[in-house]
Image 1: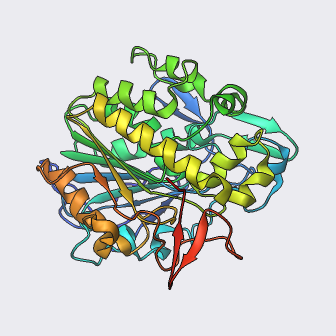
Image 2 (image 1 turned 180 degrees about the horizontal axis):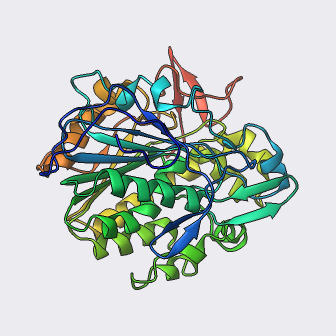
Length: 399
């Protein structure tokens, strides 16, 4: 493999027709250093704590590319940024979050049911606490380098060099990475204009308040790098439409793309979507993230409202999937192959239908969505709206 940065070479080669002749057995660590020029701009990859940035690449055996943006939290003021576990602040190439250490869900590339097992993959690691789109340095304290935009663009540059003409590109991510996927797909579609594009956002529905958009997004200097060639895109930060409005604008601008959003009905736990929403509903007080269940019902109502709104605006190329329970993210969990709780199809079937463009790719919502599954986060001792019903723990929002 031709390296992009200081990473060691692997063993794949590409034929002139774009088909991969030899797949890699593992991910290669790419370690870009210094200032890197790309499309007329200079980027300096770095992690939040000032440590070197790394990302990962694996060649597959088909001319399809998965750009996956890693999860890992966020911070925007002294308290959240001083918590050691609020977000990933560095990348350990040999650590538990390296893709070579992940072997469940869609990370299991030995599973014959995995639709991505033979694809080329660029794993865009996350270590900047800014949903992969920040471009600022802040002394809160502590000092934080919010340079996710730089890191993601350097990974994009490498992907273009290694995979110059993919037939299909799926842009995906979980949690913070779901936002990274949705924000960076605008640039990626310009990079590979002839490819068929898909977007799969796992647990990143954009349930946020206007106050957060007004007061906290500027911390990351988010707006500075929004594409200027998509009419109306910048307006979503001011007009109250948020990510729902963003998705509508971008998906309409790229009508050949297909967008899928996944979440459980009560996505929770510390770091889950209801956790961040509880912070925002309580004056952006980070401590309220510890009491995430207080926003479970409010999150569910707003998430469903947004999903229905986007689906109505984009009937041809957008679908949502709402699963049962309160788990945060699905990508790394084997539930993607088997969970049908509440009458939903397995996530893998829904994803395959999206990739095939078949009529089975429909909007999905569970029945009895409040039923939590084994391993789902629940407050202990139980707190409303979570309660015991027989042998089950359920979320009961009333009405």
